[in-house]
Image (cartoon, rainbow, N blue to C red; front, side):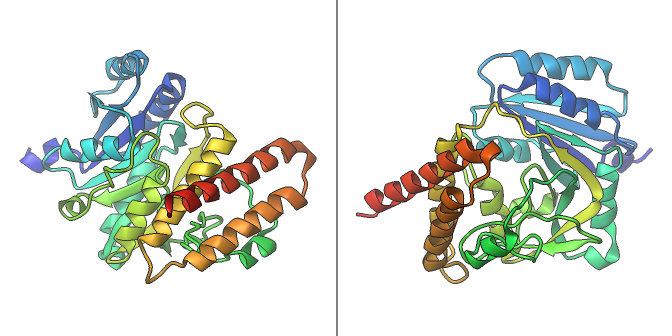
Length: 308
């Protein structure tokens, strides 16, 4: 057996924080992958050791073809992802990141590796899986008027809004990849890193990193890699705080790409989303809509204060 046969081609990284139940469910799906060998790397930013115990249980019950690793770090998705990159095994070719509140199909890693190895995708450095349960996108025609949505899957709009890939019939080139299902050629990390200045929840770190990457290289989403994002309530702030931070991130993101993104389009999209949330009333979502509108307005207020 040569040296290469002793190591898997892929490492799968799960960054987690204080969600042991979701992590356990995620690991159960990971341990059903069809690849002959796989390194599974859990990077834990939790305050306690509950997630470590979940990883130890997974390691004890895993088949011999799985190498389960664990690393404790300070919390923050960008920081945790960079820590995983620094600790990759020397012969790893591809690194896949999934969230702890996801479940992947048994062919997920196989599909990612197959796409990377296809001759027609030799220039692709980032690969996304296809989320099988995407969030609904109501009023798309109206939202498109305000640069909040687009018919083009995987687009980053001039407003800084990132459009999720849905219903892809085949491999789709994109401007960004969702952090819950993104994979990369290991070689790219000799040139790029996640933005370590983004702390705590690091909202938008996936958009910031992959859009920056897409300005120089090709990114693709393959519909053969199936993943379900079962969004957990834990680890995310309340709706007002989340919307507030999202607007602040989007403003910084737009400002960092002035040649491609527009502050005018950003302001227009904020107005459009507030308008939608306070006028197109959906009784089951009424409280959430008003909270989101409030969060957007508070985010804009923060931007106005800090701009002076």
